[in-house]
Every structure is written in structure tokens, then in C-alpha cells.
Figure 1 (tube, rainbow, N blue to C red):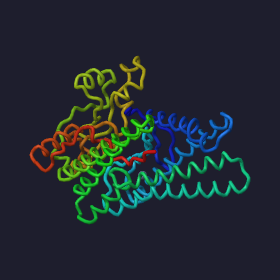
Figure 2: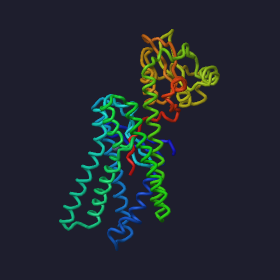
Figure 3: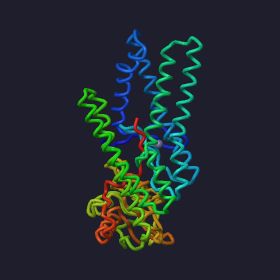
Figure 4: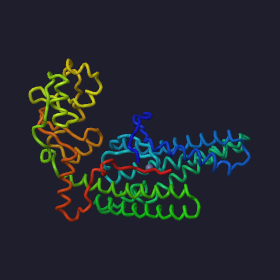
Length: 394
Ligand SMILES: [Zn+2]
């Protein structure tokens, strides 16, 4: 799966990004609707009409997926959750969180918002289709609306299957979590069901392909693989967050990080610091006080000829989201690393730079802890850190 994402639009303060794989979904939906579904439902129309119907149908479906995710995101934000944005990819969409909900109640409310939106859209489209059919409007319009009613109903139903990390699985987890008060156990049970459901989809996909439905079968097969992978990585993520919640940044950070002052040239920064130490980003200090960060991206943004006569002070950025307090917990550091992109945080106390903490330090600690504790046999890996996903497969 490609991971390159492009910003698309900003809706209600949420950045909507799409993976390039999303284009596969667009093409597949337009083709399935225009060449398969609509000609079967309503025969003898011109090719041009089928193309328009397919485009409106696909557009409506994607708007529905975005509204589903937006609904999760808006409710999540109201309840105090930090939402990174909405991601659209080959299997649909996901509202990306950087941390687990703090209570089962918040998780349940946030989860139910998505399918509730899909059900509302299904009812709305169905009502509109029925109404329009009575008013002698062109039949294709009613047919497209009818399709959208059905698609939203399927979206709601599929997502309510109790297989983590689908919405239904998240609800199940919230219920188990509320019952026993143990988030890790609840996630483990819900993601085992998620893994089993993924396996069912894989088998159904193979059987379906053997019976001649090649594209549909392949699709179910791939969604099955995706659900299985998402179930296990979401579980590891929860495990990692819980392990790290007991440790402070102070214990895991490395003291005395490489640093620069604002008065050296960009040329010196590049050769003596970034290249010499293989670093992508370094803190800028005045005395001991952290005043900013500077890195490869800032150097790259300027012309090569200017590097010898410009100073670090001219191009550095505020350190804001790259800093963390020495007494913060390591799970907070992990969530912050997932929100930002650097993978390294500069540790401060009273504005003074005292250390650096990298994702590698956190992973190292997790790996040692899970080696020492036999009940934590699922070693969280680097691949686990993509944020819990809400998968709304279409
Ligand atoms: Zn959802």
C-alpha cells in the first residue's frame, strides 16, 4: 500500500488527505457503476447517461464516506480527542487519532457517530429517491439516489460488524473495557475477533473468485488482509501506549544532544552538523535556552548559493511541537511524535534544552520490556505506529 498522501481539502478544521491508492478505488467504483450496476438496474440508456450516473454515484459515495469520517471526527473533537485528520485510501476512509480515547463512554460516542451518519444519509437518499419518483423526474436521478441509499446502508452495516478496528469492533471494545476496566484485555479480545473476521473475508473472497466473480473476490480478499493487519497493529499500539504510560521522558531521553547556535552559517550547519552527525533536524540554542529548530527541510528550501552567507538564525523555525517537558510521560511523547513528523523530540525544563528523545529510544524500551515480561509477547514494531484507524471499507 502506498503511503504518499496529498492534502486535498480542509473541512471544519480537519485536513482531508488521500493516498494515491485512493485513485484505484475511484476508478473501480466508476467502472463498476457505469459498466455493471446501472445498466442492469435501468436498461437502454445512452452510454453518456451511464457515464454521468456513474460519476454522480461515485461522487456521492465519496461524499458519504467523508461525512461518515467527519462525523466521527467532529464528535471526537467535541469530547476532547485530538484528531490528526481524515485519510482516504483504497479501502475507504479513516479518522486518524493519535491516542486512544480516555474512557469507554467517549470511545462509544465517537464510534457511534459514524454509522449514525451513514444511516441518516441512507434514509435521506431513500426519501429523496421515493419523492422524486413521484414527481416524474428523469429516472436516472432517482436510480442514483437509490444507489446512494443502499451504499450508505451497506456502509453502516459493514462497519457495525463487531470486528476491531471496524466501528462495531470499537463499540465491542468499549463495552468490554467498561465491563472489566481493562483496556488491553478488551482490545485483545476485540482484535482477535477482528482477525477472525478478516480471515472469513479472505476465504469468502477466494471462494467468490473461484465461482467466477474475480474482481469482487479479489476485493474481499484484500479487505480481509487489511482488516487482519489493522486489528493486530491497533492492538500492539494500545499495548505500547500502556507500557509507555508508566515511564517518564526523563528516564528514556538522551542527555546533551547535538545543538547549534543561531550565529553559524547555513553552510557550517549543513557540513559540520547535519552531515557529520547524520541528523535531519537539530535544536538551536542561545546559552542553554532552546530558541528554535533547524534541519534539512529548511536548508533545502533555500538556494545553494545563499548557504554560505545566510545564518541559522535567519531560517530556523519555532521549536513548538518539537519540544516536550522532562516530566511528561513517554506515551505522551509517542502521541506527539505521531502528530508531528520528525520522530525526535527535544526535552526541555524551564525553557532549557536538556535532552533528546527519539522514536527509536521508545521502541528500544518497548522491546526490552516485552522481552522481560512474557505476558507481553506481541513486540510492538515500527510498523505499529501509524495511529489507530477507523476503517470504513466501501
Ligand atoms: Zn466509522
